[in-house]
Image (cartoon, rainbow, N blue to C red; front, side):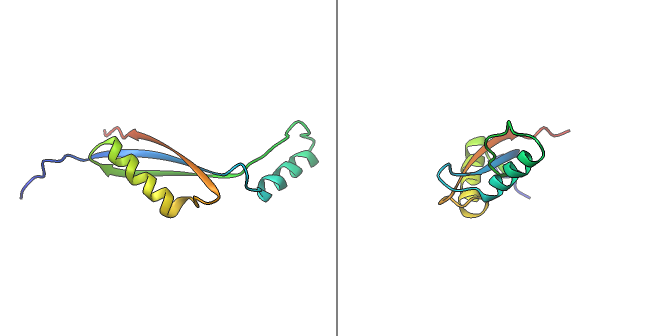
Length: 94
């Protein structure tokens, strides 16, 4: 059994997907109306998004970030109407 010279690390990623500011958010509007109906008149704007957690292996953080950008562009976010932000941390193994 041969061992590869490239060592991989486990990374944890948090992905935040939000609608672009120019895109209407009917779900956010409905939540804001519901809050107003409940008496929370001080809430002036609500935007609804998605939060996704992933674990992946990569040679380094830059490689993990590149893979995550592709994953977001191809599956997790619709780049036409959504923005995304990724936080990558190396996982601590016990």
